[in-house]
Image (cartoon, rainbow, N blue to C red):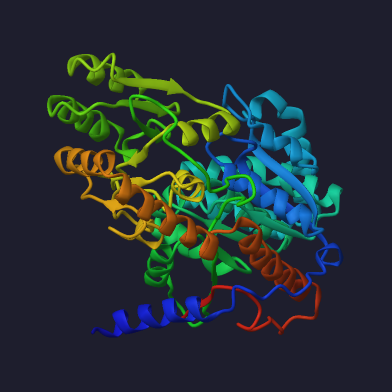
Length: 456
């Protein structure tokens, strides 16, 4: 085993050694006011963000939400009604609120001229267009945080929100933390990503596969303070119960219609299943940029009566589909530019409900789905293997019963959103308390579930 491999194994053992049952009370209300920054709030495809906000509020955090753009989705989950915190939308595009933008830049320049000018020079010389655009918004966010009395800023993604949080910190000394999940981690320019990770008080990530990737980015004498906590789902909402309430049997997919979800492979697998005389229908819930091209594939393969693109649905409607379906299929893949999933939330939800799953061993998925035990795994980009696995699942009630019971047990063990959000809350309290103390004392590794330090 190489030195890097031994180190990675040590990291993952450290992540597994913390106690998930630790339920110490969190003095969240006394930690200060927490700003929660995302690109768009709320988003239909980001129920994990909504769940996390709800759980942090439940713990007593004094929370303010900041959204870089207005949400683009045509529908809105009713789950959002449980969110109590106020949401502030930043100017976007900037020219529509030019007076406010100029006033906020002048305010920050007058307040911190050296930090403002040095950051402006750093951004302009980077030639990174996204970073330049974030610099335009940064004083607007900094002033909103100051006005709202926020003492710590948490960016829910490491790419654009992480860049904005970092710039605000450079110009106003606002302490910040980061979370990273999938595309935001693997699509970020490595040099810029390292700077943001090094400046953050703590970095949360949702898979052990991501921990290994972050370990490869760790440079310099100071360790990255990385914490691993799965997203999880609400076990009381996604209860284990009967499925298979449709005839013919339903093969279900719930996904954004983007390449990394592998929906075209699923459609081609459905053509193979039809040719093998399997009795089923396939329903794909979700929207995205590939809808038109996927519709063309359905027509070309003469699957109009077999495969249906249902469009985006509210979470309650998705839950109803989980009850109707016989199997959930999500053949995720890694795209040519490196984009991939972490652990898709739909897999956690389906497993919690007891819906048997066929998917691929991409990224963190095997951390939830163990082949032959809690689901079936097939190689990505192989419609024939996918068709055979779906046929096997559709034909064996005994197999489905065993897999769904084991998958639910795995979710109860590792993917309880309330338990995992408590871990995140404890860590946020720790770093928020540390930033209010005199410099020099950062709490150590004793603080939280799934604690992993990345060192050089």
